[in-house]
Length: 443
Ligand code: HEM
Image (cartoon, rainbow, N blue to C red; front, side):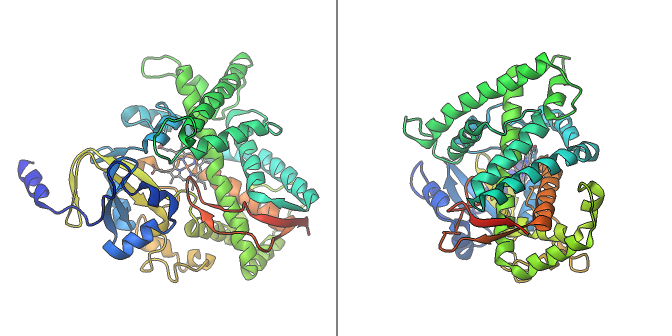
């Protein structure tokens, strides 16, 4: 081992620029959507920078993803920037490590097993139909905030059994809270981080009320909150109220923020690609469904699966993931030093021309079983991350996207309002700058 450490120490660090003291390159990272692209052009697929107060190595591509996911807990561990860590809270699944992380993950994944998902379908269909009807009545709307209300409503009803349909304050709190996620950790009254911290307190109070309510009226629901309430830790004790609150905060956040982004990208991309929209509608017309949409119907929509997968390739809601190096190692001849941060890149992995032909192009056919471009190399499709920290809500997300898309295609049409800014804000999740203004109606 000493021999290996010695030779590792002689290896060069990746190329790149550490930027200013303390701030590093954080400001450009946050404000420049081409941050990674510019540096990839200059330095290649691995380079160093300094983000959120840590020297950081950014790595792009399938091999890098495999390297990071397979080194979890040995060479790397989760490490979100300070603001994300504080706002999520120490007992969030996204922050836990080691054996606690594994037991909690196992517990929560029960809420996303096929049987649980099948039980969510009727409620998802019902909520989706009522929102679609509401939007048709509006005729013209800014869709992104509406989509947020919808995904939040689904998350609250299905993950914690609470109806928040008319509680706009709850979603507003989440919005301001998430505005502080990837910022500099400066606690002055006017910073986004300080405002977000205040929102965290208010969110936790609301969540505590939901938990207490449920404890008073226990139900047999096997939703995420039910599982957490029934769980016992290693010593046979129930989970602490502080842990319950952090876990629910994370689930409600992760369960709606990413999905809002994914749905709005679907609506945007299909509005821009009439041929694909027409083909998607044709598939829907071939599937007869006189009553309620069921899992059986959904299974038949294979072209829709390809479209949704392609939406998440072209505009992945989450840009990448952070890790800390806990044991120095080597990658492609470069030193990866202990104590540094690592950032794997989802969007740039999906732009690799050696894997995806005309990678810039929105082309659902690339996921047709005869082409299956993402199968050419492991970890070339990483919308949901990978390895032991892969998204725990992945199947829930796919189900909700599919139900939303199918019902939308079957009964409604939409058109982008001219003159709006469709550029994407990337952080914390990708979303159109002007919030996606559309004219909406039933067919
Ligand atoms: C983790 C993406 C939906 C809950 C992750 C990660 C990614 C991701 C990339 C891994 C981050 C890392 O490597 O550190 C997405 C996308 C979604 C989505 C693109 C929607 C299209 C959801 C939903 C839920 C959820 C619906 C819950 C209901 C979580 C949790 C983690 C996670 C709790 C942390 C897992 C862990 O650290 O073990 N997600 N997610 N996500 N996701 Fe999702």
